[in-house]
Structures are given as C-alpha cells and as structure tokens.
Length: 102
Image (cartoon, rainbow, N blue to C red; front, side):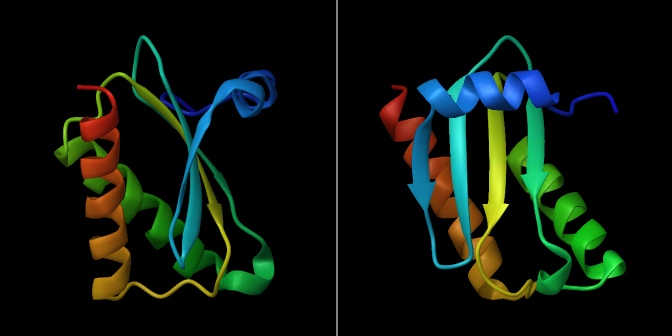
C-alpha cells in the first residue's frame, strides 16, 4: 500500500526511532523523505472494522497536522476507543514532534 512502511523499514526504524508514549498507543517516529505510517494492532484490541477505522483516523489526523516528512509506527497498547482521548493524544504527539524538530 502506498504510504505504508515495509517490514524492512520498520525493523530499521525501530533501532533509530524516537518514542512518544500515550495511554492508548506508542508512536515510534523518525524524519523521512515522505509520509509513511505503519500499525501494530492485535486482534484482541478490536474488531476489523474498529481497527481499520482507527487506522483511517490516525492517518488523516497526522496528514492534517502537516506530518508530511515523517515515518511513524503506531503500536496500540489498549483497547481501541475512538474517543476524545485518542484525538487529544494524537494532537499531543503532533505538537511533540513539531517541538522536537524545530
């Protein structure tokens, strides 16, 4: 899929990435030449519909916040809940990345 991280990119990225931790997810990230995102979500964290919606929400929120040259791996660490907490955590992540890289 276009804009997705390959297995090789993920393994390379994990060794040199910075980490942002929220109650809902871990975000491993590095600067890259283009926007790419990967997800690690177990089946126990939600149905296929919930997991796919989560991925769409995260991709759109990251694109909306101008994360154009970022490679991100999102690891879900709690049950998927598309609540205000998710949007708050994603906004915190975006502001954290912006602050670190400026």
